[in-house]
Every structure is written in C-alpha cells, then in structure tokens.
Length: 353
Image (cartoon, rainbow, N blue to C red; front, side, top):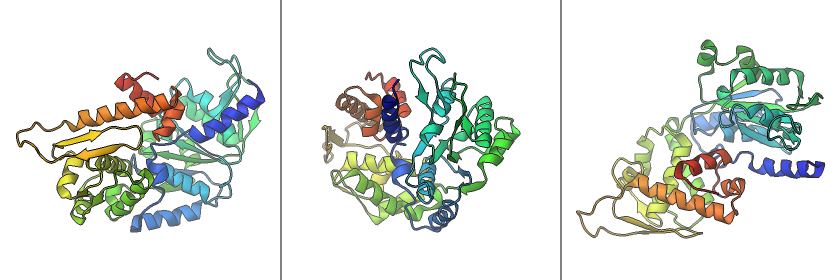
C-alpha cells in the first residue's frame, strides 16, 4: 500500500469512521433545561484541558455529541476527531482498528494500515462504549495511554502519538470493576474528568427544541406540526431510547403524517400505544412524499406499524446501496448510520450490496 493510498484512505475514514445515526452528533447540546445548561457549563470547563474525559449516561442520550463539543471547545478543535465504537468491532479486529497493522501480519492483511490512534494524532480519539472492550485489550490500551506510543500488529517500531482520549459508556463501570470485567487502573486513567449526560426523561422541556432541530435537519418535505397537547404527551413519555428515540418518532411522524398538525392521539400512534390505521404512503427516491387518507371503512384492519416501518427501512437501504453503487460505507453515510449498523440491518433483512 503506497503512502498516497494510505493518506487517501485516512481521509475517507475520518469522514465515515462514525456517523452515529445522526442523532447524537446533530443534536449537539440542544436544549434550555437546567440539565443542559449545567452540561454546557461542564463542557466549557473540561474542553480546554488535555486530561482524559469519561462520559457516562444512558444509551441514546448524546454522549458522542458531548464528546464532539468537548473537542470543539479545546485547542485541538482544528485537528482530527476520530470516533470508534469499541462494542461494535469484532474482538479479533479491535487491536488492528486501534493500533493498525503491517502487511502480512495476519491472514487478510494485504497491506499496511494505520490505526485510529495514528489517525487521531494531534487531535481527539473518542472511544465509545469503552465498557464493552474485552479485558485483554484493556491492558494494551492502558499501556498506550501510559507510554504515548503504539505498536502496529506485526510491527516492531514504536510510534509516538499525541492524542487526547475521550471515552464513554452506558454501563456502571464501578459494577463492572467489582465483577472483574473492567480494570480499575484503566478506569482511573480514563476518568480524570467525569461527565454525566442526562436522559431525555430528565429534561422534557427540551423536547420542542429537539423536534425543531431534527425537522430542520430533515428538510421541509414532510414537515409536521406538534400541537401543545402533542408536546405534553411526548413530555409524559418515559423515553427509554432517549434523544435517539425522539428522533425516530419525528421521522416516523413525517413519514406517516407528513404535512399534518398532530395532536396527542397521533403521538399515541407514533409511540405504539395505539395502532396506526388508515395510513398509506408513497415511497419515492428523494424526497419521499407521504399521503394520509381519511378512514374509508371503520372495520378496516389496522396497519401493522412494525411491518410498515421495516418495509420502508428495506426500501431506503436498497435505494442508498443502489445510489452508492454497492459501497456500504457510502450508503451508510447517505443513511446517516454507522457502517456496522447498516451491515447488521442488511443481514437482518437479507439485503445484498
């Protein structure tokens, strides 16, 4: 692999290394609640530091958004921000992903590859779901953090790296340490500056601002209006999926009720409390138009929301793959999904690239 090819590959990886389903990254620190005001204050304080940051919080609460905000508040803002989901990389590949490998170091290593640490040199490396990292890799990670050098798999030359580490997890790390699943010394090395992200249920007053943000990002086609009663109903929801779940609800609303004004009864349908009935849609390449038809027959069998959404998801995945000429990473970018997430969905639905 030539140096030019490596630089080219590195550039591509920096743009697609992790486009978290566009939820956390694009809902960056939005909201006027006390919880978000406090979080922004914390980010402003820890950003300029070079110390490692450990972000804790429930899944879907925007931990990568916080990591990016911290990076942007630091002196490294103009440098690379590289993110990797430690729980999404197969165990046998995680070392190569982080540290890189030399040609021929293992079966399938057709050329030299630089790892995420080298890609992030001078900038920030975000290790998401660090609590899912296997125990033996924790030892190797700790050594890199202490020595400031990496060794590519199959290589013998230590490579100095200057990287700020921000990590995140939804797990109770203390409980993981007690269960001998996470190294306490690594925890203390990573958690110099702890940051906690609140769940959406803790800040329901931010829901309206988040909805506005999501709709702005999604474009004007299919825009819906939520009445005060709808916002109130959304505020009462438990939000187990947090901000990510809210984004899905907004997109679902635009697909099923595009152009409509929604009340609390619509919200109940969007949340699956009651079945969605008498809704048809027309799938187009871009933009996607939707049509809401009035009830034609009270005895009509309600549409199965799960099947409807799965059908739409399959169509969008296939469309993105066609437009990307089968390049999964490019299709994932179009769909604002992680590459690994798209691969999982393709396997689930039997979609071929």
